[in-house]
Length: 381
View 1 (cartoon, rainbow, N blue to C red):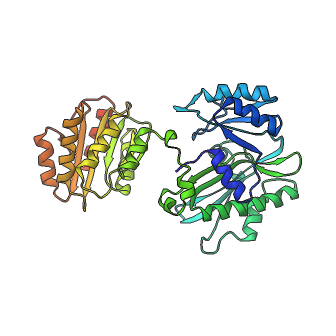
View 2 (cartoon, one colour; view 1 turned 90 degrees about the vertical axis):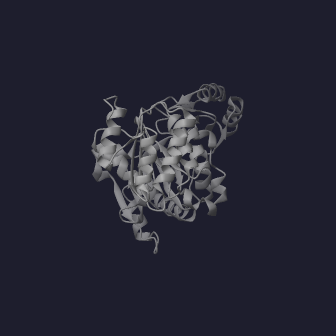
View 3 (tube, rainbow, N blue to C red; view 1 turned 180 degrees about the vertical axis):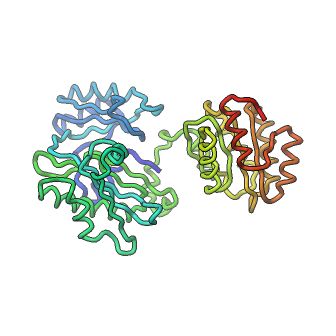
């Protein structure tokens, strides 16, 4: 689960990480009042859960309280990458002498937390990794031992030239790692971490991603979920125990199991297609879940064809087939559908689909190839 910058900064502040003085608001008039209290100059920052706010005009510096109100009014009326701006963060604009990058994430290959630090802050870390990989320091942390002092020093030492700033960055990293562990986070990122002209290290930006599976232990984080920032598909999927992530392609996918779902997406890319989503209906054979999944896909106007890829274990292929036929009848689906069943009751599942004139494929490769061609507007199988 993503949270907004102002929410992430509240977590940082509680963890002992210095942040600029500021407050979030949905009112331009209130933004002016905040600017008057803090004292200009202030930064007016759109609170949307997407990257590229600055390039889209969602971050502006105001030199007066009146300018803060004007900027806030303009930003609150914006839509950035499809998301309306409903709140802005008004905070002190701090001149900096140096900018760095600092984050704690999960290295899934090593199954350990990893500290990522770089003296090249304020830009996309992916761009730094591509152009100047030598500027990125990765420090793996044994989760049973925790972040040791020598590791924190080694990760912080390249960030600033001033030894005083390095020492403060080391303390910031320790606090960031403690927050990461305490709150079961997937990512805690500061970009940029700045050394101000007053010689103080401050987190100028904040990004936090929480682990949904741990939210039952963190009700304070669960309450930070912004339902309005989610697409309708994500909300409906969560309410029906489906795992759904919207992507940018044209081939909608309904699959069971996270592993098979990822393999399906890989195969779609292999055959030159672009998946429109990750959608895992899980181990349930509930036909109702198939109906909900189909509703979610049909709401995405980019979807040109639908691929159903089911491996029947606990999931019964015939139950999925019943749900699929029911969905096509109830929703008046006009998109081409390709289905591939393998496993429990696959023969009966295929028979149900064939009676309903739904195309079935023998293998996963065949199904994906045919579905990719249909999504690209090529001839049907």
